[in-house]
Image 1 (cartoon, rainbow, N blue to C red):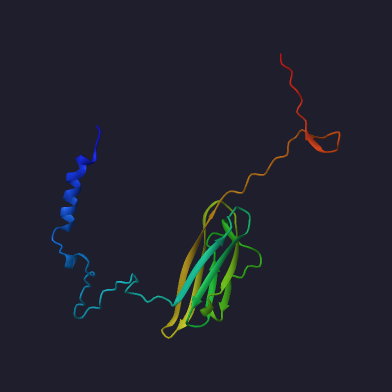
Image 2 (cartoon, rainbow, N blue to C red):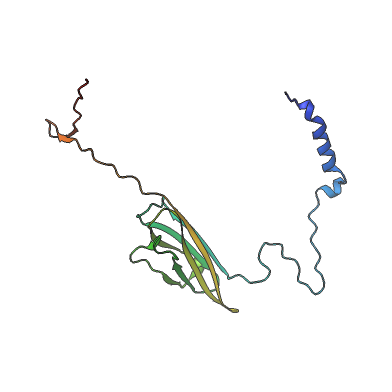
Length: 188
C-alpha cells in the first residue's frame, strides 16, 4: 500500500487545530505559572534539589585517564572544591578482590585550600573485567556542623589484550635473521 502526503494531510491539520485550540497569541508564549505558597507550608522547590536535607557545600568531579585494562594501573583525576575551608577526602574500595589501590596510593588526605579545585590523581589496578567502583567521600566543617558528600566512580574495565604467541617453527635463516619454517606438505 503506497502512502502519500495527501493521505496524511487530514491528520496533520487536525493536530495543528488541537494544538492551537484554546490558545490566543497572549497565552501561547507566556511564562509557566509558578505555584503559590500555601500558608504554613514552605514554598515549592523548583531547582531540583531535595527539600529535606541540606547538601554539603562541596563540588566533586572525576575523569578516567586512558582505557582501563585488567592488571594495568588506571589513573583517575579527582577534583574536589569547596568555599568552606579545609576538606578531608577519603578514597575506598568495597571489593578489593576486583580492584585495588596501586602501591603508595594515599587513601586519605586533607585539602587545605579547596576553593582552587585542585586535581588529585588516584591510581588503582583492576583485577577483573566489568564495572568496578572507587568511592570518594569529602567532609567539610560548616557552621551547621560536619557535612559529607560522597560519590562512586564507575570504571569500566576491558580484557587485557591477547599476547602474541611466538611461532614454534622459528629458525635462523642464512642471513642470521629469524624466519618461520614452513615445509611443503606431500600430497598423496
